[in-house]
Amino acid sequence: MKSAKAAFALLAVGFFGIMIMTSSCKKDIFYKTDVIVVIQDTLGNETRVQNAFVRLYAPCTDCTVDTNALTNGNGVAQFEFPAKMVLNIEVQKGDLTGSGFVQLEEGQTVSEKVAIQ
Image (cartoon, rainbow, N blue to C red):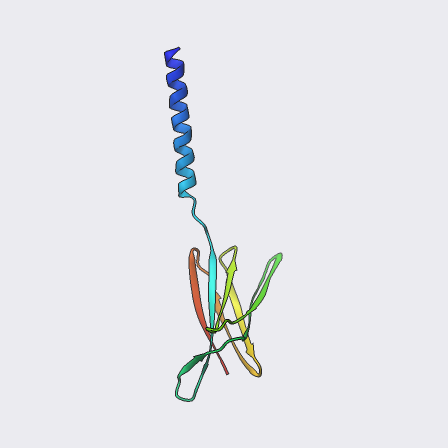
């Protein structure tokens, strides 16, 4: 009887130990990007542009990634995605446009600057 209780206690401790180890090792995976929109003057000085339309898109097999946002007061549009990918960037503010691309990285917020002209 003592050996059965000891075995049960050992199994219970082992079970809870595994539960604690697996739950504490779980990390939040995210793929974020901040697109910073700027305009340059003739001297090369940059000014951030607010309320610019930013579109991120990528053709992919059996899916379509296509989203947009406006830049905030600091000239930044923020995006988050469920997986690592490379995205095309299109920016427009009035008659001014710009483009680029961004490669998302796991667990990092990747910043990409796009100058509009």
